[in-house]
Structure formats: structure tokens, C-alpha cells
Image (cartoon, rainbow, N blue to C red; front, side, top):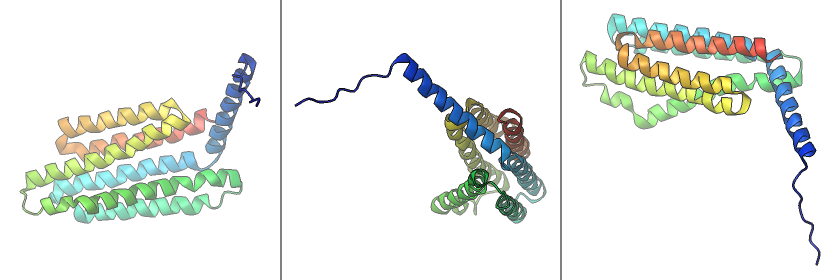
Length: 210
């Protein structure tokens, strides 16, 4: 019984396949650049800065960030929902397909962070701590969350471009730098650097992915 033998592609076929992959990736980037993803990344950067600046001043004033952090969380969620409403007004179905994923990504990130915190119950360890130990423990929790956020950048970069891989790794290094060497200004540091990363991402997408 004869069996068909699969032959490896010729060099010309391999080059044609790679060229088609490059064209598909270029088209995907162009679609994303024409959508509202870039401005929404910039908005996300502003929200990130605002939220963590609130947390920084909350610690500076009272060492108990819950009240103002809740305000920051509400501020962030309202911004994400506003982004979602804005994106639904895009006319192109191709562009809309990219747009709705951004707010869903952020909401999913917040949701999973909330689930992990519910399981770990770190606040149960905070009740009997003095102010200094309380701040240190809350810094640890926050640093883990921030690093996880930019792990998403690294994963996304494996699909869309090395820029996001390097930016994600850089941000994780900066978060660790702030955690170990700028503990008194950690939230402000994380807010400025993290927010700048989101803003830089939006500018990069709009400028180089057209």
C-alpha cells in the first residue's frame, strides 16, 4: 500500500510562508493602531498614576490606605468602563474586535487579583502589626500585583513584538528597584514608572504600527 510522503517545503515556499506571516502581523498592528487601543493605553497610564499617587498620599497622611485606595479603585474602574463605552462606538467590526479586548483585559486583571487576594487573605496578617510593619506588608502585596501586571506585557510581547517584552522586563526591574531602595516613595515611584509605561505603549502603537 502506497503512502504519501510529506516533502519539506522548498526554500521559495518557506520564504513565501514567512512573508505571509509578516504581512499578517503588519496588518494586525495596523488594525490595532487605527483603533482606540493607543489612546486607551494612554488613559490607562493616567489612571495608574492617579490611583497610586492617591495611595502614596494616603500612606503619608494616615498609614492606612484603605479609604483613599478604594477611591482610587473606583476612579480606575470608572475609567475602564468609560473606555469600554467609547470603544463600542467604533464603526469597523475589525477595529471593534481589538477595542473590546483592552477593557476586558484590565477588568480580568483586577478580577483575578481580587480572587488571589481573597484566597491569600493577606489583610488577616495586617491587623496586629504596627504602622511600619503594616506598610512593609502592604508594599509586598502591592509589588507582587504590579509585577504580575507587567508579566502580561512580556506575554503579550511574545505575540505582538519584542518592544513589549523588553518594556515588561524593564518595568519589573524598576518595580523591584523602587521596592528595595525607595520604600517611602514606592507607590509614587510605581505610579510614575508604571503609568509612563502605559503611556509610552500607546504612543509607540500609534507612531510605529500604522
